[in-house]
Structures are given as structure tokens and as C-alpha cells.
Image (cartoon, rainbow, N blue to C red; front, side):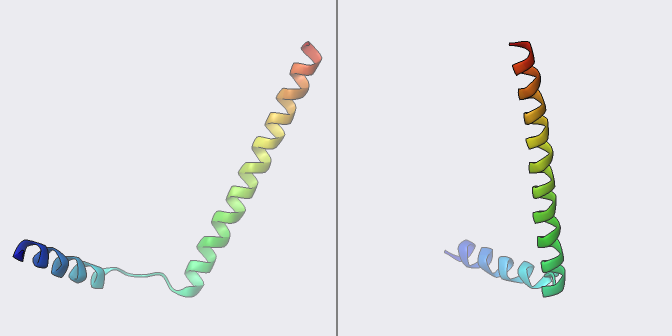
Length: 59
């Protein structure tokens, strides 16, 4: 039982050492990820459309 208690004490100790992002940083990171995902989705959509058109020309 003491091993479990020691584990949770260590976890809480390590969590206090974590540098959490500020609200502004978190918002910036989130917007960056969303824009990146949208750009990748558009890129692959265009690639898929191009391949589809090439296949239609062949068939």
C-alpha cells in the first residue's frame, strides 16, 4: 500500500514541475493545428481529385 501512496506523491511532485502553457499560447497552438489540418485536407483533396481525373481519362 505504501508503494501506491509513494507513486501518487511522486506524480503530484512531478506535476508541480510542469510548465503549463498560458491561455494565449494554448490558443495560438490550437489555431496553428487547426489551420495545418485544414491545409493538409485541402492538399490531399486536390491530389485525390487529380488522380481521379487521370483514372477517368485512362478508363
